[in-house]
Image (cartoon, rainbow, N blue to C red):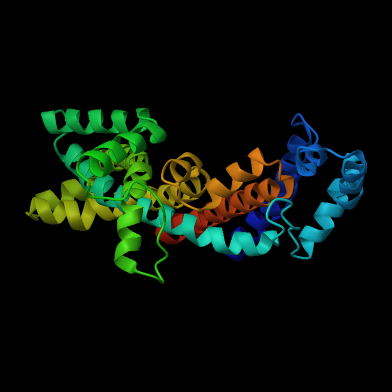
Length: 313
């Protein structure tokens, strides 16, 4: 296990460095001058020159990257040019919101995808299996923003059951917080549930073909016990690692959902940063998202080794 951790960390750190180079470099390729955007409508030449010197926009790109990376190593993400707040403070406020949304979405995916995948595998070739496949295809095909708008029209505009958007912190009211996060979690969770269902179905079909299942049946073990105690635990080994990676993708893919439902998370933060040319905010959010995704990938590798004894040697 120690060797696995060292090997994964040896890959993780250079990957983060490469991601930081790409994030910083691609930002500089965007059209427009950030100093002009910050100067306001008057665009006083003296103000523009002052802004370029203050934020080092007039330095060569490698020099700007070195300055940014040096501050980043010391935990300084910089200051937002739009809000004048430390970006580290903004990240600490927005990250828990996105983590909560991703966690609730993963819960929806597990509650929906696991049972449907198991039932589809046990009823292979039946109408139930075809219906599950249709659900998986729909979940993967329907865009999140369209589904979010349809849910708002149905449950908020027509029925008036749920709020159309906004976020209530759990410290203020847990009940209202869960109500405000219900529709966004359903939107994000449907796509992940479809992926989970397809993998669970395939893993269960393979598990039911194994010798230990035939042996259990020959001993007279009840079918329910065979499914729950023999086949399912082995089928869930790849699903655990898949869920870990999907959680990282949920953190990175919540941009449109947070915009549709006006949730003040990472997604809305990066969109606001792009529109206002707040490069430091965009760089910090993308880099943090990449770091979280790499960390979840590391956790997935560790979980797979722990759950599969054959890999421990």
